[in-house]
Length: 297
Image (tube, rainbow, N blue to C red; front, side):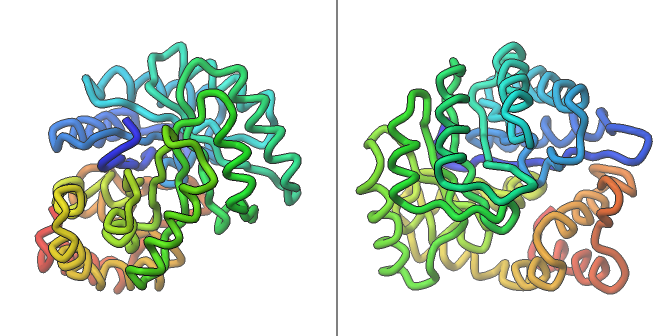
């Protein structure tokens, strides 16, 4: 399951609770598009804002409605005991894999991060993807630490935060990491602006935010790269430059994809946990125009 396009949908909600029907619509949309896997309760899935019970419910809804599409579940939490409980929920629900970021209020040391993954992987019966997301966790993995964690049981993939823009430097980055990890552990790229360049550089999988709301657009890029058509993948990604710029102006992708889901009628407004607010005003008008101009719907 750790290859191709892994699409990460929102977890639509308001202050009264989860919007389960909207979440199911998002999952079924991804199944119809034939994405390679679905990643729920990642950063786009707002896992940090949910109770344990809400997360367990989302896991079951995702697995129930994903059909034959593998579901990977984010299990990051502040306490190791909660990570283990979430891992149990994922396994019990029939998930195909788990995604773990080293989430913490206090900045973690390398020894603490290794200890987290060691504890969790030895308790797992599912494959695990290491979630390297320094922008959110404030923890920076070294390639050496990735190599140590990748030797642990059940580690199957590493989700890295983008690659250099230069094609040669991007390939060198991926190859340096691969030199540290076992051959069975895949390398995945995140940061949607880097999706095409990451796949062209040798990454096995694109862990995509926009894949959760624009799966057809994202699949076209992924399939071109998988087929060895690097120039076409790059061209298709370059078309989306206005969207990447909107991400930057909005402080990240979440507010933009939330507004996109609202504009497409997939979720109701509001769909994010407060104090988060989806893109609005002139930014949302610009996004609506881009959806039409770029044929994203």
